Length: 155
Image (tube, rainbow, N blue to C red):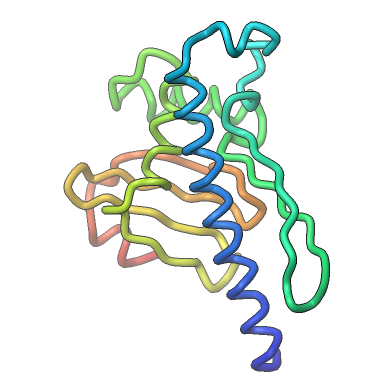
């Protein structure tokens, strides 16, 4: 891979992170404005409140970047909630998913990109929260690792 390709890939990942943060800020702002703003929204759709699509220009031309700070499917969300969310004290899969998205937005979160698959890994040491977001923007998992920061460092 050439230096230019690596630089472009890095730039695209940086744009993706910015869009994730912007989407969460919009979601939290709308949530704080009251339910009357959401009366046309199907609240049973998990991804409706945490999805943002945007278009971004790069040096290579137009690139459509879509960010989903949700699990890839309802089934995956429910599986991860049963495995991790209940033990973490969350009352619902939606609450668990929102907390995972909040970790990604948290300025205290350590962040790195996994070299082998391009997934983004986030970890907050003070709360021992660990989140993996796929290269295409979906939450893969959220839990509190037994070995804390050592687990994050091994990723």
